[in-house]
Length: 236
Image (cartoon, rainbow, N blue to C red; front, side, top):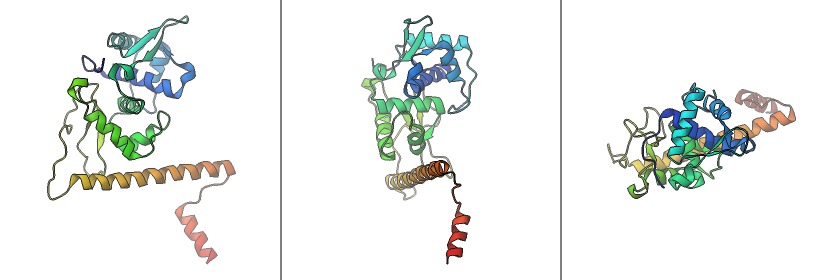
């Protein structure tokens, strides 16, 4: 099977995304019990939007996902436990599954955001590798079920396109056709420049995190730009 026969509901997508996340981030408690599924669905962090899924709603979503072969239920313990079957069901690799799971849990994101948010799911070497898997998912042939993600129109004042998953159905206002050249601007060139900027921003964020971690281990406060400049003046 390489496609779902119908669009998922928001609760089904949240349940499926939660199972995919916990399989990668807390493997010791996976497969999940119903209580853990509900707790994961209703997390206040790493979720967009924040939801309040009831036990009955989660149970119904799990049953419907089982009927779609996207979830497997096991009875090896006192309580039923659930695991996702998305990769086998849709025929996608680990990298693509990680991107789909993040899009289901956090909503539309840029390639740069996906790379940072995927750190505990799968480590992408760079933004271009994220773009590559997104392009594959967007260009998935109809014979395999059709596209699974779509590029969204760029918001005013932003430098990078956002992507959305299509497991819940078509996205309003999405760009399903390739960008066209308008106003004398080459979209491929602009996208390349945006990718380079995003890559630099991601590297800076990673360096800042490393510096903060080292400072915490050494018990010192990281110097801000003003402190660095003052130190340089005093030294001079």
